[in-house]
Length: 179
Image (cartoon, rainbow, N blue to C red; front, side):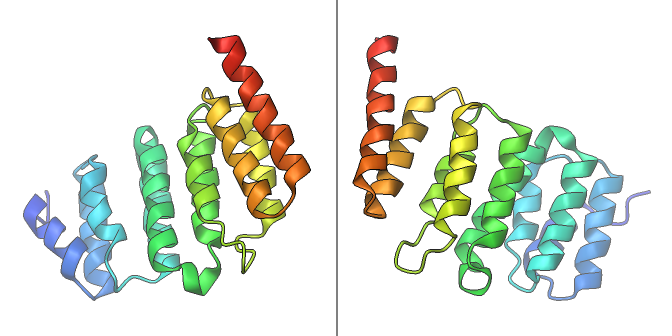
C-alpha cells in the first residue's frame, strides 16, 4: 500500500530538508515502481542533500531500474558538475560520466561532458585522468570524429600542439573515409 501520492513524493523530493522524509519518499517511490527519471531529477537537485546522499539515492535507483541507469548517472554527473565542483574538483562528475559511459559505451555524450569539465588553469579534473578516459572512449563510441576533435582541442588548450594535430588529423581522416 503506497504511503505517498506522486505529488507528495515530488514535493518531498524538491522541498524537504529532512533526509528521513526524503528517504521515506524515495523508498515509497521505488516500492511503487515509479520509473520516471524526471521524478528523480527533483531529488538530485534538492539543495539540502550532501553529495554522499545523492550518490546513495542515484546508485540505488540505477540498481533498481537498470534501464534508466544511463540517464540517472548522466543527471547525477550534471548535478555534481554544476553544484559541487568547487568542493570536489569535479571528481564526482567524472565518476558518474564514467558510469554513464559504462552503461552505454557507444554514446559520445559522457565523454564530451567530462571534457567540458576541464579547467586548464587549475588542472581540474587532472588532465591525464581526463585524457585516459577520453582515449578509452575512442574504441567504443560511434561518433569517433567528434571525440577525436575534442581530444585535439584539449591538447591544444594544454599547449601540446603536436598531440592536438595528431588527433585532429585522425578525425579529419575519418571524415574523408566516411564521405
